[in-house]
Amino acid sequence: MNIKMQKLLPISAAAMLFATMATGALADQVVKIGHVAPLTGAIAHLGKDNENGARLAVEEINKKGLTIGGQKITLELDAQDDAADPRQATQVAQKLVDDKVVAVVGHLNSGTSIPASKIYSDAGIVQISPSATNPAYTLQGFKTTFRVVATDAQQGPALANYAVKTMKIKSVAVVDDATAYGQGLANEFEKTAKSLGVNVLSHDATNDKAVDFRAILTKIKGENPDAIMYGGMDATGGPFAKQAKQLGVRAKILAGDGVCTDQLATLAGDATDNVVCSEAGRSLEKMGKAGEEFQTKYKTRFGVPIQIYAPFTYDAVYIIVDAMKRANSTDPAKIVATMPSTDYKGVIGETTFDEHGDLKHGVISLYNYKAGKKSLLNEVSM
Image (cartoon, rainbow, N blue to C red; front, side):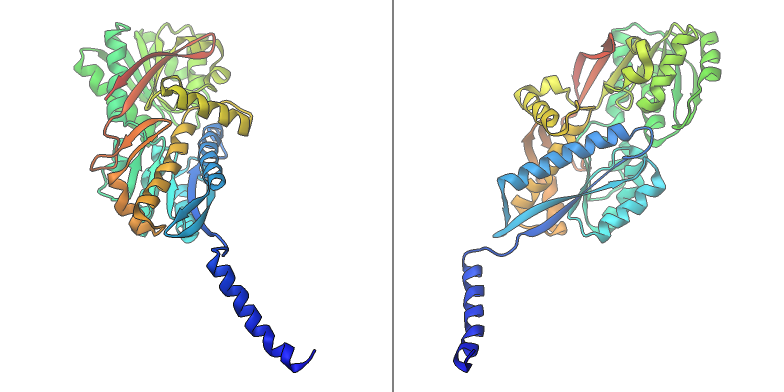
């Protein structure tokens, strides 16, 4: 190679770089969005459902193409497992901060969302829970906490009102699993039930790993209530309902969204037909055409039906991207600043937030089961 050719090479490389910059063909910026839910343990099916919803949104957005601040963006879902354990939740939250995610969808449980929220707040990262319903989550004064479901301060009263006014319940025994979610929901239900004149015969606590409820149920059978309110998840609520039937307990079983899943029929058998439960959001069938389309896309992509909150994680990702677009930035601080003015219309309906990060217009859906299939009873706008 002669000297003249050697001198030309740096000039040619510079020209190629300039041409690349001019055509905008630089590598996309990878922007990470965190997702946390239990992917191991008794409620892993619910955690995977949440993750699937978020993943579907990320894949769709990448396929359509996303540009923020003149830069092409590729989203990456940084999915983590907190095993529904508060201690593991804080460790995972710190990992996501270290991974430099711009926002987090999660956690699934109130008992994990609440301790993790302090870490996200300190880091200035938006956290949108798709399913944590304990009111305390958004009442800590953090600017980073949001949720896209109603709270137990709405869900507990809605379930109690339905039990009294429609089911004509006059006496109830209350049992909770001693978690932030189960205990919080049971307490809200009990408070409203008492205000409506219901005789609350007892309030017992179990735990979220329990498998044998016969001692509590035998005691409750002696109290002979019209209903038993169970605050917990389907992994324990299913066996609870099943053992109640086996012991000949006549009471109806009332429960919240943690129990109100399609998996309940597998866990409780034909005892599901004795369950009335609530969800802290609009039912899939009330989501109209958007719900139908989401259900089809979800089933096609993952090969399984939706459990419960996948549409909410899906919308949560789109809400974060909407905030990025309005901020024209992927800077977490600018996303935080833009979130309060959110007005997003998605699969779950219109999402606007109050000063705490709660929905301005929450919805509670009430269900029973017929031959193991969930059936919508009523929808209550809050």
